[in-house]
Image (cartoon, rainbow, N blue to C red; front, side, top):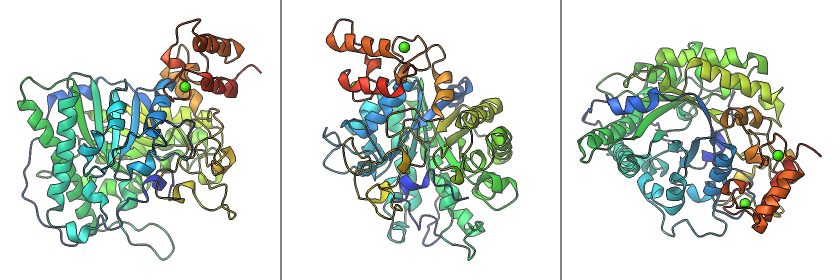
Amino acid sequence: MLSGGARRPIRRWVVSGIFSSTCLVAWAADYVPAHNPGAREALRDVSFQPGITHVGGNYRFTDRHYLLEGATRAERLGTQALFVYLTSNFRAEYPDPGTGLWPRQDPVSMVNLIQTRPYQMLLSMPFKTFVLTGFSFVDADNDFESLAPGWEQRVENECFELAKYLLKTYSGQGKTFILKNHETDWHSTTRTNPDGSFPEINEQEADVIRKWFAARQRGVNRARAWARTERPPIQGVAVYHAAEVNLVVEAGEGRQRVLNLVIGRMRRPDPEPDMVSYSAHDSVTTVPPEEAFDSVTKALQSIDQFAPDPLGLKRKRIFISEFGLYENDPEAGGGGDPVQRTQEVLRAAEGFGLPYAFHWEIFDNECRDPLDPSGERWVGDIGPEGVAIGLGERRRPSNRHCRGLWLIRPDGSAGGALRPLLDRWNPSCPLHGVGDLNCDGTIDQRDADLLADMISGRVPSQLDADLNGDGRVDIRDVTVITTNRTNR
Ligand SMILES: [Ca+2]
Ligand SMILES: [Ca+2]
């Protein structure tokens, strides 16, 4: 199944020729040993935690910078792990309706982009782990014919500069960064089968992917090698590179996929990827909820069989980068009980010993345009910029226009997958981030009264009462309480 969960937001910048094999120059192996005790320690003690993805959502609730609105909502819900994109399409994926935080001049590299104010504000938030889906800007240029000479070196350098910056800037802050790509299997070939099925990759295509993974990993390895020589020493920060797979069920069945044909064969002098991230729609949404545990576990076993382990991370070298439920579109998969399915996925991920599993999307990125008479057009395909539609705009999708890849629905209510996540993030007060301000287990008038007291200054205002993520505690946050009230 061509799962759409993650395809849509990056369709505009995915490079159709990225893995074409033309004009590639051989590179001189500049192998830097990947072994890094500090890096290993950072993940070894991580206990399993669910995270949230935020990119390209189709609706917003505030006029704040969208990167920060989503991140603030995620923080309120209680997660310490956030997954965002670093993409040359940043203005569309994270629109800035009125705060002027994006620079006028376009950044020209990942490290340029992460130094912009929105990302600086994001990285200063108290998340412990940031997953960054980043294609180097040289990849996003969609012009490999002309860029091919020196391509791998440029990819390597861009990853090096980003990783070096993160290590240097966040030394001592206890943060973990994971640089990864997006669903490599979908990008592994531009061929199509006459019957519409997705072709198995061939040796030539596998070789280009291998070189590309190696270039990215070499960049991260170089940065870690640099960090080991710095004085004062860089410590208390970790940067990893993950290679992503998404057709794992088929790889387990012996079909030629990225997991078995590329990752399973990476050997020195190619640096092996630190980690393997798994966009898990093929095992999460293709079975009934009660079978999700077995389905996901089996897929993880396949990854464990093929993934190298250059840092000695054991099963901490694998994580689920995407699981999402098409709560509103059962035919697409993910139907049935969303609570049970979510619980089973989390149980499988934790039981297998993974560090993370990220829920695909805080705000759904697969909604239809309500103004399109055919009902076919996606909101994400409307225009070049600003796919997150604001409150009151005619084009804003409502719940029924979306497929259900959400934790927060367009009407502000909680998606079906949210409760099991809240129970893990904040067991003592799970509903806090959706309105239970006084932590008595219900969302009702008493919470609204407490919020009113904060707004009027009768009690000190708490930033965690900024329920809609616009950076202020005011009357607009009352809406979240009224939408989610448990006692009506
Ligand atoms: Ca309450
Ligand atoms: Ca607010």
